[in-house]
Image (cartoon, rainbow, N blue to C red; front, side, top):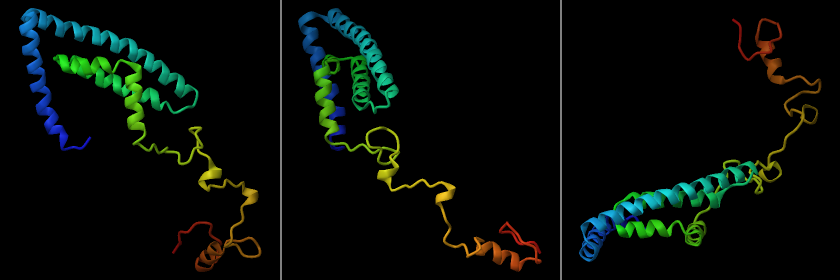
Length: 180
């Protein structure tokens, strides 16, 4: 959604809600309208708790299995939006909030956004396991016996250490610090 639409939505949603309040209030009366708003908030909080706990347990299970719980995180985010919409007074926001409790609608919204988002792992190329894959990252892990330093001379001594020892007072030094 372009950012230019946000001010328009901030203006149109309250106008729409007020219009629906007036129309519903004329049909069923003031107290029934206020009771309906209160009832939708209560039902929404019960649904949010029930589906939120189920989503949380799915998140934990997928994390424990070493999987990235993308769908469960998407469901959790949409349930948070649904909760905010249901706690906002109004029938239009309640209708949108209740629709987000329907799994196929959440799935369609998740698919819409997932097709437009590229997820990058902080571990680099993990091969789908959630753990680094050195063979694909170009990282080679060597043991001390497999490693040889190209700057060593024939005797296996480091020339930098030799130069430091020549500059010092005649004693060999293993540190880069000169003693004057």
